[in-house]
Length: 333
Image (tube, rainbow, N blue to C red; front, side, top):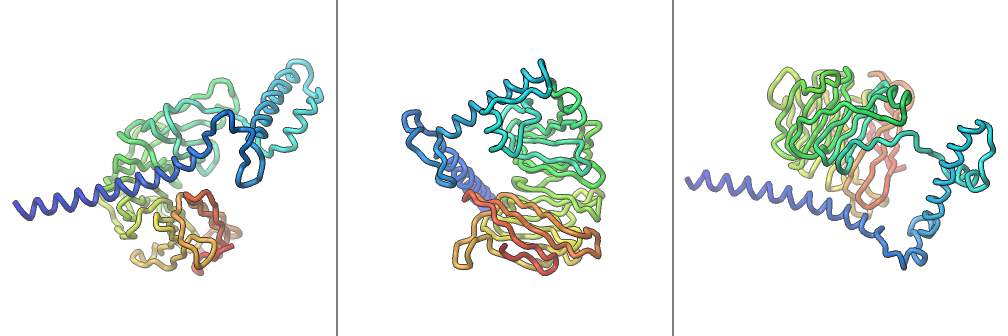
């Protein structure tokens, strides 16, 4: 009995450590968000620490936004070429983006969103344990009544989404599973046990049978659709918060909770080909990575250079961009 009890205690300690790490990460995010909740008497006195604009400016923007929407409604009813008000012109000059759709079907925070490769579908997932798939064509046809397909097989909140080259939808969750959904039937094609909280997922463009998931226990797991167990198990150590892929170099890129960017060569699956601390200066402490996105330039094929820019966001409120040279790794930009 003693060996069995010892194993149970070790497993419990590991789960408690995962819980503490995740709680600390959420606490950092909530603390940062809480700093933006200000009492009404102090609004006019405070200044934004990044660009120096006062909170009253945001209130003014809200009024201008309302005026702009009013102008658009009036112009559509009277004349499409009607000149907007001076306030509306001012807002148009200050805003690069404008709201096209408002998708409000989720019953809680939305943690992840992802377009498919062709751009005609949007997948979203979050706290309500649901994965929703929206048709862009349907939204364009009827902006007033957006609808979505629902995949609700998870039992805890959704942490990440991605699409395979064949158009299937991947989702990781805190229920310790990676599920692969057939969007047409809204049912999972398969479900993989991740052994701990699923934090991130990615599909390989060059191998439609292999997908990866990062976990709270620091594992990078490669799941083969033809097998019931992980085909690849790589122990990173810290939590694997974010995953990205480079087709040209056959690299799976990783951002972890200790603040390191890493690349794993899928032609030598046990090899981490490079590692880089996510910090502004060499002497600074690495910052935990929350998301990764790679923009490549030129040929994306197997003979391409794979050069581009790798963006890494962090819990400290900064986004750091690195020049990515494929097999040569990443360098601070």
